Length: 122
Image 1: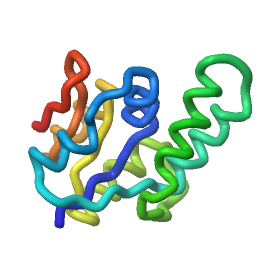
Image 2 (image 1 turned 180 degrees about the vertical axis):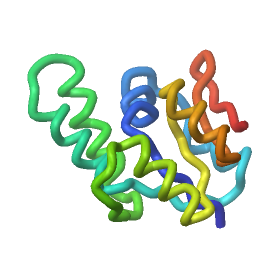
Image 3 (image 1 turned 45 degrees about the vertical axis):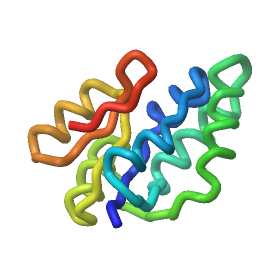
Image 4 (image 1 turned 60 degrees about the vertical axis):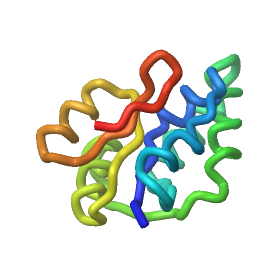
């Protein structure tokens, strides 16, 4: 079963523009285990504490990820933790953050992103 680490950018994007992202990922990679790193959950929690649309989106993203497998990590910044966890777990990463995508491709980690509301796997 493929492990997929989800970044806050991907989760918030699918909340803002609902798609069949879960089914699309399953169609492309098969059965998968969604993983939410502690650092990503904390990032979403910080965003959710605010006011406005971004905070509401973060709250819904947190709710959406409740069934994801939790995973701890180190104390590095979020992107570094995601790259490190992906390498150590042999996982793909779901993100729409272009800098993170570049970092992941640089170390040959599979990336799941959204293009025009559709799931793209690279």
